Length: 330
Image (cartoon, rainbow, N blue to C red; front, side, top):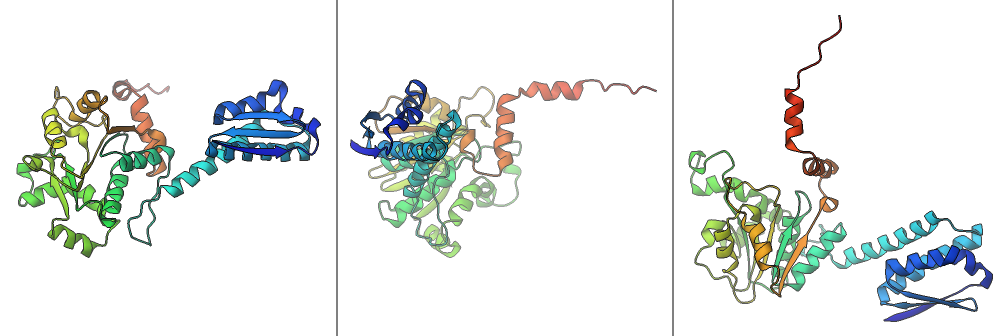
């Protein structure tokens, strides 16, 4: 808990500052969870230190506005709140920067949801993250794994993905088994190649410090002091999810991420991710993070596309395509 104070040169300006029936004051109190009192031109703010700092900045901005203009509108209070809260969020994101050891590339959360996700990974041994395409689920998990490897809190990184066939059988793809599986594992390799030099990645993979493997190859292993990421977890079956989660060994972290709106399993097969979230939600030590369309940081069109698919029934497009075209007037 902390406290701050603001002095009004003219105590009579408190009426304009606080608004009709103290409406401005109540807004600041309710939004930031602070106590605000006023006596003899002295405003006192008390509460959690971070909230007190933001509330003080808001009231200082509003005080300056009253001195210059003589009054406040509802939009002035909203604007002051928005600026102060955005600054707090920016400071939080800066503090959450991921130290991957690459000075030419800075990785930090770009939304509040992403900041929550990073904090959950750092604070828990097992984190589930559910969210739409483009919200950084895999990228931030890989970055945190690289950070842990650089800090030597873990000894290896294991990146895992289900090799779910989506319309093309593995057996008919060209090449040996490694070449057949490469398209499924490519997104994980792309993410790690952005953070570690290619030659170093190659060396670390040769030393088995970094492994990129299909989910089916996890059976029978015990993973100690490893950072294990299961990507596209919505395409794991219930049995595969149980198998994967029970590989966790001493000193390890696990991140399980996926999008339950993009399940490629056969009809009637329950997604292991959906089942695990329901089954494990009451267990202490496991964190569950849900990201939304507001956390999408890819191309701006991605957010609009996700929203369109989430809000527009698929049958509408089919009905429109089958609707007879109007005849032209002649």
